[in-house]
Length: 140
Ligand code: ZN
Image 1 (cartoon, helix red, strand yellow):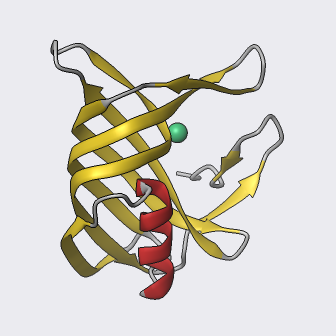
Image 2 (tube, protein in one colour; image 1 turned 180 degrees about the horizontal axis):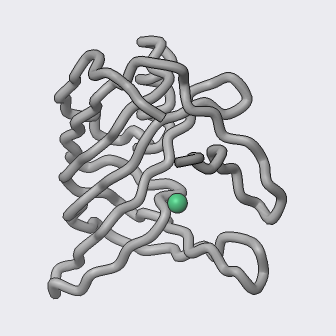
């Protein structure tokens, strides 16, 4: 899919917000259908997922305490007609150990986000079974 750049947002997320819910709400309020999301900061008690091919579901990995959000990378596209954020994170603890995965939930301590809106025919997620909701594959 080809897009043209739309609006660009650089912002600090309010403390206490759930990061995934915030991005979904932010996009919905501004009618953002497709976007690239990047971020840094820190999260409290984040929960990340690891998709297991074996069980066809996400294993929940619960982390306790405040983690540096070393890197967040993801996107927004439409699922069931509404903006849906798909975010992956790399998290660091006080020892410098790194954890990561598909962000399921995480309370914002301090988080700075970059959101780049993309304009064009919106990308749409469709349920594919196996607990996966994916875009159509690109035909070259
Ligand atoms: Zn994911």
